[in-house]
Length: 351
Image (tube, rainbow, N blue to C red):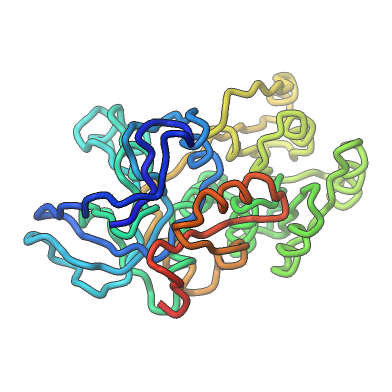
């Protein structure tokens, strides 16, 4: 099969080439890949040789969906032709945390696209337990973003947005837009997104979300607008941008007993952020870390099917697998792009 292969970290060690088809074990599903999303932190990490989880040689790509090609002899719930999304996580199942169903904190954690061959290829194999059927009214490109949407879904659940609460989201990239849509479909009162890119703000504003443009030269300008609109502050603030200076200042816009969710720093290089501990104590504020949960896939696919979240809104362009490096470069230099999808087996529209 054709695949993107990194023999070691760094682009000099990568190529689009022919590799052996995956061998299907008794409990595994073989999937012909229709769509795989570029994840900027993970895929740029492979390309720069700075991946935190990368083990080589490996086929990257961890956001993907496709059509079942074959199944192992012990597979009971899937058959060739089924449309599926695949959970890329591969926790060991036996360590201290796995035994307590805390799978993201597995002590021996592996992941497709990081340490196990992933989705930038024509075919991939996965255990049946990590495969999810895609509703007929959900496209392959949207289904490929189940993992990314699941991370946003878990964040919203962690925040426990109060009924009619006011929510502020920092950043209107792919995650920021998904967070905004999910927050809007919850019991939130108002959802506001701030960003310095007006084009991205216009896109999410079309979904009924309030937006405020950030002035990178003087943060006080957008802070004044926010304080005029929300004089009592916000119940929940979610940082989906990863700008320490912006996070520190925005943190002070929380209402008493408000929650600030760190969505953006977990998968990037170490960054220091300074918070006012006295303010946290005086206003009884909560600082929340958030990662992901494997069981969110079914919830996310149902939310896509019912229109509560529309991942296709964030898809900017599609590329064939042969043009992967061009797509990655464009993804990294064009700030107006939100999400790029790679189609390993040709155009997947209508599939």
